[in-house]
Structure formats: C-alpha cells, structure tokens
Image 1 (cartoon, rainbow, N blue to C red):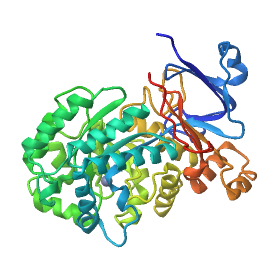
Image 2: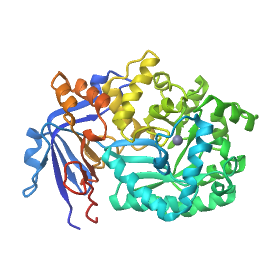
Image 3: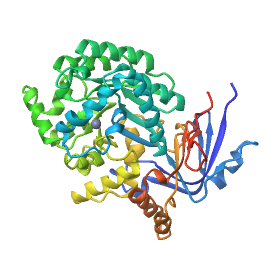
Length: 449
Ligand SMILES: [Zn+2]
C-alpha cells in the first residue's frame, strides 16, 4: 500500500501535561511557526518548522495557516445526538425536562430515516465546532446507533457511542428489557466495536430508568469484549439524587449503585457529578473512572455548580473531561463550553486559566477516556485529528487579539469569545473534512482509505 503524506504549517499549541497537577506554563507547548507531518492519518513529526522543513518529502507542500492556531481536535465527553431538535427548550429542570422534551424527541427516532437525517447534521455540526471525537448517547433504538456510526465511518471520525438502556420509568415506546437491551447491545458491539475508528459504549441512561437486573446486564456487557466504554449520568440534580436514594435504599450513594453493578472502572464516563461527596471522588480516583463536566447544561437546567477544583485535587485527582451535553447544553462548541466552565469555577472562587481550559477540551478528555496514547495532543504517534482555530474570526475578536500579549491571553480570548465561527478548518486522520471558507458545501468526505 502506498502511504499517504500530508503536512500542515502555522502557529500551533498543544497540551503536554496536566495543568491541574503542576504549573500551567510547564504544560503548554507553543510554536510560533510549526510543522505537523502526517503519514497515513498519524502524526509522524511535530515541531518548529525551521527544524523540520527538510523532513518534508519532495512533492508535499504544507498547507499553510499563518495567523491561525493549529490545535488538537476537541473531544466532547458527553453529548446526546438525538436531542439536537430540542436544544434550547424552555423552562424545565432535569426530571421534568426528560418527560416534557427528551422522551418525545427520542421517540421520533423510531423512524430510521429521521435518525439518519439527524446523524448527518450532528456529525457536521461537531466538525464545524472543531470536535473530532465525542462520546455519544443514541436512543433506545438500535438503528439510531447504526445511523450514527455509519455517518461517522463516512467521515472516518473516532467516535464512541451506544444504545440507551432503559427498562423502567420512561414511556413504553422507549423501554427495552434487561435481556433485550443486553442482546441488542451485544449485536451492536459485534457490528461496530473496533470497526474502523468506531468504538462501542454501554449506555444505561441513568439509575432511575434501569432496574438492578439491567445494570447487572450492563456490567456483563462490559466484560464481553476488550476496550468497551461505559457512559451514564450521575448526581446531576438534587431531585434526581433523592429519587435514586428511594429507588436503591440498600446502596450507600448514587455512585455505589453503579459500583455495585461493576460499572465504575477505567473507560467509564459519568456525566455531571455536580452533587458529589468526598468519598465519591475517592472512589473515582481509586477506580480510574472519569467525570464529564458539562457547564452549559448545568447552568441551563439549573442543576448546580460542578466542583472542578475539588475533583482535580492533586492529592487524589479524578480524571475530568469536558462535555457539551447537548440538548440540555446550549452549544456544541467546546470554546463556548469553556466560557461557561470559567464562570462556574469563578462562582466557587477559582480561576480556570486558558491552559487548564484547553487541557479539559483536549488532552484531559483523552485521559479521562483512557485514550491519551493517541488522542488529544499534537505529538508523533498520535492520530492526526486537528482543528485550525482563527483568533480573528469576528471583527471584535480580531480587535481584541491585537491586545493579547501572550499565547495564554490569546487562548483565553478564544475560549471566552470563540465559537464555531473561530474554527477555520477541521482535519480527521490527516484529511481536511471541514473548511469554513470553502464556497458551497464546507464539508468534504475523506478519500477512501
Ligand atoms: Zn446527558
């Protein structure tokens, strides 16, 4: 097979370590003029252009983005693709929100053609936001998973997704049973897990909509193959936490419900975790489970304020990723999500700096997913999922950028004022699949491998 080569050139940033564990300055790598050399979808070299220019093979002209910022593609650790049609719905907290908006929206996915339409739009909106990997809830319908993975496979994006498991406390058309949910999940695992870049995630919605039997079946599914993921919700809203206490009186905490079923482990991602006790954080630290911080959702539904700096306390750090949680979240842009994460931290008396912010949206999320050996960084051996940020995307941003004296200031401006308009292009496995400025359709399916 002939190897495919590509090269990108321009200012570049990447995280190299955890700024919640050490000084931010030591964790950010910045080159004013960098080269990223890509071979067969993987980064082969990354560093100053002046040092690497001679390694570019004859016939390869780097795509040059002066005045922009090359960065690792964003990773979204918690998002519901079927909820695009209800983003920004008015006036409900979590449990009422589910009944009023979420369940009716998810019922419309009984129609496979609807699922395909929404999956196409969703994938494109992720790429428009510079997001190249997401951990995604589908609906209870197996074909909702097929529709999503099929579209992801067309773009060759690295996605993690699964069929929602619910066997109680939801409308009848959205219920499976412990056995049926298990069997349908297993068939999807066989069809999709490890096919190209697609990975399966066992997906009980949350404890109130699954019986003990279904949670145990989820635990059995996790053991059925290597490398499977788990996603669910945890401690999002006080009313929900109280309901879980009533439904599972024998368990010592909400997290203990999942631990009892064998669901708390590496590659498990718990959404929200707003109302957590110290012993819950200790359990996550000891087991290697991750938490998805979803600030736009937590503010929009009035759920509460995630204790980011308690979770990441270096004495017993918990792995934290960043999630949009659309449709309760209000944007698919991780830049906008960081804008709100900063404010949530500020309300608790903390300062989320730009290096910490970009860590959460890239390498930190990759670590929370157990994927930092190949995602979340610009580094040799990593998959070449790259977004090209434009600090001059709007007149205000261009004006403000003129007053940024350091890369940290520029990144902070991007995470405060930026959104999908600030994403100039998105590369997946080394191929440009989105170009904001291309006339006509800005999306482009990659050449077949
Ligand atoms: Zn969610």
